Length: 150
Image (cartoon, rainbow, N blue to C red):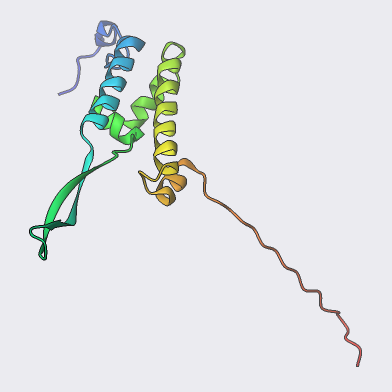
């Protein structure tokens, strides 16, 4: 059913778009800090076989869970605070939120870098994620004469 002719429904609209999920930079900062704390309080667990001495001559293999560092990620942060990565980028474009979003990105970068440098995280994967890949370029040219001497 179409709207009646001569209607003024468009005048009833009083705002554009939906409301922001985080009304203030402080509320976004609080949510980011909650994510960082959650990552530290909930490490990834790896099951590792370990030898335990049962007696003087006997050993027993037992599976033990070992905590592993959980890397901070922008995708993980956005999932935790229930916004999309594109939504986070929109907050980055706002002057009043730029300090919080920059700080969050720097914390994520620093934690990944330090975790990889100290061996807690896989250095190859983190280096690629941070754009730190070691790129080497090797060029070699061989000149051939156009008219070889016969």
